[in-house]
Length: 103
Image (cartoon, rainbow, N blue to C red; front, side):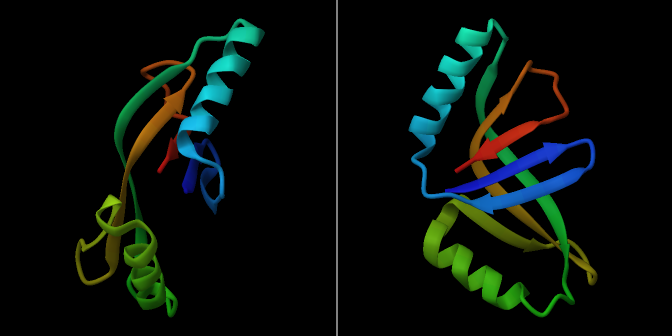
């Protein structure tokens, strides 16, 4: 599973071995115990990468091998590619600009 964290200081991506459904269930339980609101919806996250990074070709092959059609890499222009990931968006409310996207 890939986990993307969008925060006010940027984007952080990590690979975890946790099942997405289990992770969402744990977040729901935590929010309930803390009396906090939680918004969960299916969606798509995307971010840009420069085309001139040496690891881009290897990243593209690894993403296709591991995640198939869930992750896409599309050329935006001569300088950037867009990485798109289908998954679940989790945030404190539906209009939040910070949250996590999992797949």
